[in-house]
Image (cartoon, rainbow, N blue to C red; front, top):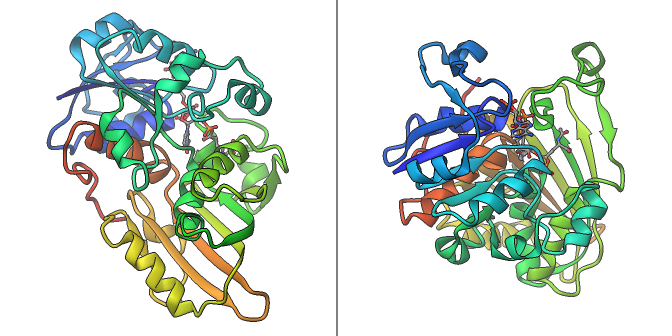
Amino acid sequence: MNVSIVGATGYGGLELIRLLKNHPNMKIASLHTSSKFDRKISDEHTHLLHEDFVLEDINPEKIADTSDIVFLATPSGVSAELVSDFSKLNVKVIDLSGDLRLKTPGEYEKWYKKTAAPQKVIDSAVYGLSEWNANQIKEANIIANPGCYPTAVLLGLAPLFSEGLAKDVIIDAKSGVSGAGKSPSEMTHFSDMNENFKIYKVHEHQHIPEIEQQLSTWQQNMQPITFTTHLVPMTRGIMATMYVQVNKRFSTQELYDLYQTIYESHPFVRIQRVGQFPVTKQVYGSNFCDIGMAYDERTGKVTIVSVIDNLVKGAAGQAIQNANIMMGLDETAGLSTIPIYP
Ligand SMILES: NC(=O)C1=CN([C@@H]2O[C@H](COP(=O)(O)OP(=O)(O)OC[C@H]3O[C@@H](n4cnc5c(N)ncnc54)[C@H](OP(=O)(O)O)[C@@H]3O)[C@@H](O)[C@H]2O)C=CC1
Ligand SMILES: CC(=O)N[C@@H](CCC(=O)OP(=O)(O)O)C(=O)O
């Protein structure tokens, strides 16, 4: 089947190209840009030196004529408009931005400070948390691909929340700099970021309502979350460390058994052996989410650590996993690469 990528020159778009190149059932039909018309992708990105795709403008009708799926790796605000155009055409859409994830337009406008997509379009989008929403994803025409932090956080918390075991959660998350996209900024400038560690968007992060929205589908009586984000001087990777007050006593072995049972049929979620915690490098370049956990007898809290590569499981990889599920393919198609190490 044919696929197109809008926003192909950004980090998410480039990662889609890398992964789709090895996909057994999907072929890139076209790459699209809003600013670099008629340039070759290899002129812009030398790691794609012999890939001769010419960047095309964004013509939804033309894309829908040639492609079965379009991936939108575009900034929030832009995706909302594009999805509205594509939703009238015969093409499936997977949007990597935050524009279609929040079901209430007012919430989107509050957290993103941008105009929301039309309610009808939001209603037709399925939240693409692959491991938990596969039944809806199979039937969808539009997927709101989850945010990078929410992917790590939700996969780590889902077993406790879906079993109604959580009272309260504090989430301490850290990301590599590619999570901020390719445009340089004061925040990501090398000399300011190197050998530095920064907290940002305290109590204001746009992923707070996304995480709460999904947690509340599992456990309706959940409390508002505390969620903080940090920038780490590394290129890729997210680590979310989560402290959950639970409403019963556990042993760490019981927790492990719960997580292992829930995720045993999900090839991209790997549960760490009892007493071990994952590091970001063990998922680098892969679609894995690795999770470790332990129960603290003294506090009655569970500590969960979840790691992903923000550009793969947190963006392009999960987008392809969702495309596979939507199209009735093996969900691992094109994604079975093992992590890059060291
Ligand atoms: N980086 C990450 O880890 C993650 C990112 N996301 C989300 O995925 C989306 C893409 O992120 P990322 O690739 O990092 O961002 P980048 O900034 O790296 O790339 C975005 C691309 O969008 C294109 N673009 C910019 N303005 C417009 C416009 N007006 N119309 C159409 N295209 C435009 C640009 O390409 P050109 O100039 O060629 O048009 C640009 O290369 C964002 O919504 C982001 O929030 C989600 C999860 C993780
Ligand atoms: C490191 C870094 O800056 N990360 C970005 C993630 C942006 C993102 O993925 O945005 P949406 O999911 O809302 O589209 C941030 O914290 O805002």
